[in-house]
Image 1 (cartoon, rainbow, N blue to C red):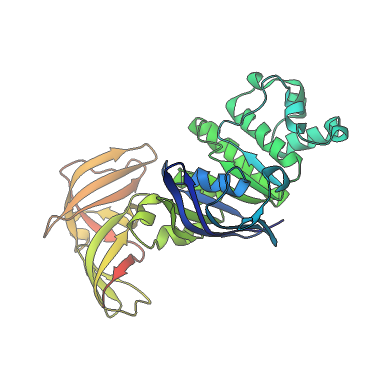
Image 2: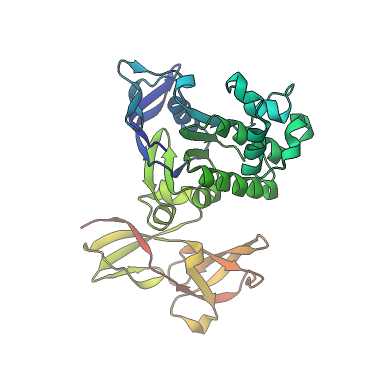
Length: 346
């Protein structure tokens, strides 16, 4: 196991600067998900780490070894990384076994026991070794690509949106198998993704990227519940922002007087609540009431848009199961759990 340290990295494509002073530490044996929309610089960062691109400035460290920096450049093949791309990029003319052992020393390529171990590690049966890639499903191809990356016993695994081309059910099963294989290997992993659920469920640490900069880095629960700003909050799902007034451990906003522990300042502020924090009831069940103006049904849950009384503030609540009020219904709104104060002004 080796840690990965990225310090002050700038990187550019011709005529366009992509990364701006990126700092990121991935502790040994952990998984970090770099989350952001298309074009924000996620894949460029991964390519710099892998050695496919030279940074314009900054350093990349693998443990105590500098692999990119002023006067230092270690080529990709000598960095000890395993790389899995979005499409898997298996060789179509080679069978599964030869795909997995490609790049190993000649003597190791004939080790069928090792191939069987790797297939088992990624949750595939050993008898797939003789098949060609076109005889496999998309999820099986991605698992073979991971087995190939693990075959050389890399110090760090880099995953570039490896599940995005799969259908939802296959994506979840493949992701679970890959996560288990990486845990067994105690690998240090960097996953690039635009899927917020994938980032939160797969990684020990989430790094939110926007326009070539990291907006926030931290454990999944922390970045979801306590984002540092609008960009970080919206990168991780639905969010409602309300103006408020903070004082004496309570924030006053359109949803009422809500307790906020540990707030040392007072004055104007901005309040974040997630849709799942808003619980709906009969109009007489709470001091805050409103009218349903829109619903979105997803099967497992629904998003309910409300216009609150006394000002017309619009918020969105998440309901679970079939308990979804119809448009025009009047309801009460109660906040469950503590809201998060995004910005405060003394």
